[in-house]
Structure formats: structure tokens, C-alpha cells
Amino acid sequence: MEEKSNQLSNNCSFMNVKPIMVDMPYPSIKVESKNLIYANILSIDYCGSVSELSAITQYINNENRLSCERCPAARTILGIAMAEMMHLQKLGEIIFLLDGNLDYTVKLNNGRQAMWTPKYISIPQDIHKMILADIEAEKAAINQYKAHINMINDKYINAVLSRIILDEEYHIMFLDTLAKEI
Image 1 (cartoon, helix red, strand yellow):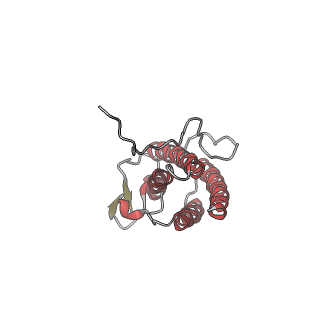
Image 2 (cartoon, rainbow, N blue to C red; image 1 turned 135 degrees about the vertical axis):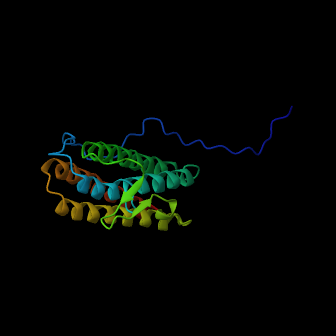
Image 3 (tube, helix red, strand yellow; image 1 turned 60 degrees about the vertical axis):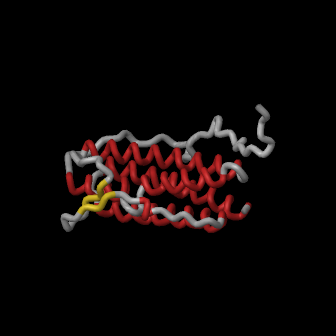
């Protein structure tokens, strides 16, 4: 059989892509005591509208759409997504230690619950708007983490949240550079 001459392929290699994170260790994952209120607050960071799950999903979508034509940008986006996956994992450990439930449901103070949904992510078609949406999502995450630090009176949890903020600020630096290059 004759091979088709107009085949399409993605030649972007993701070999050696590493998480884009501040070169600084994370504090140990521990809590002062079980606390369902704190677990519920962290469920918002875990899987709320502004959350690590939302960030991961948005970044992976963006990486897929960039990889064929803008491989270096796609590699950067994947590196950021990998860091967000590590944040999700750390939050999950803390929620578990606090005796919370990891079910992709945000538990609100008024007793309501909200399941994570892809409606939480922004998927603009324009590449520049895509990067700007990622920057805005990082800024929203930082603001939310700061608010949660003020609500949580546990030095161990707050140390991890403060360390995550450093990564989010670092991501903004990379995304700002990408926005200028595009």
C-alpha cells in the first residue's frame, strides 16, 4: 500500500520536561490536629473554581493546543502543569490528615457542596488570551491561598500554602515571558 503524503504529526518532544518550581524544598506534610473545617477550606484549593485541579486541566488543555506549532511554549506550560499536580497531591495529603474527604467536591460552610466541573476553566482560542487567562488564574490562586492562610491557624498547613504561593508567583514570571514572546 502507498503511504499518504499529507499525514500530520506532532514532533514536539516532552522528554526531560520537569516541574517548574522554585528550587526550594517543601515543608513536611503534617497538621497540628484533625480539623474538618480546615479540610473543607482546603477542598476549595483542591478542586474549587480556583484550584489546583482547575489549573492542571486548563494547563494540559493549553499544552495540547500549543504543542504542534509552539513546542517551547507547550513544554513550559507542561512544566507548570506538573508543578500544579504536585500542589494537588500535597493538598490531598493535608486534607486526608485533617480527616477530610477527597472526592472532588468542595464543602462550603453553609453545608452546600459543589462537584468540580470543567466550567471552571478558561479555554480562549487566541494564544495570547490563553496565556493571559493562565496569568489571571495564578493571581487568583495566590489571593485565595493568602485568604486561606488567614483563616487557618495551623503553622504546618500555612507553611505548605506559603511554599505553594512561591511556585505560583514563579509561574507568573514564566507566563509573563511567554505572553511577551507571543
